[in-house]
Image (cartoon, rainbow, N blue to C red; front, side, top):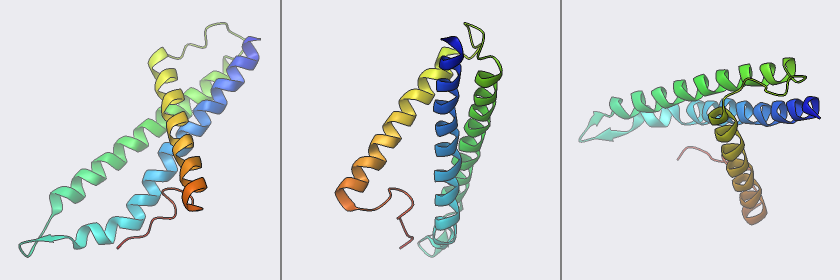
Length: 121
């Protein structure tokens, strides 16, 4: 039973690192030129660009955490205790459920894939 639990957690962590790796990366590459073209009183807003870059780096760090959690849950699947903190499990499970439900509802309502159908103005 614990090996099945390890594989299920690895699947959740795999989805989580896919979400936190692909969506912010897609958005930063799609909107970077537009973001740097924003002006206020004729001056570029570099602070906003730096903040978005900071958020992207944070999402990549979260992605690395979930890559390690995926590997660790597969390697330690025979143990009753996977050695993964409850906060990592909880955040991964809740955020994955929220994003997947959002993407499914968005697809059902608008017949588009959420986040990936967005284009820069």
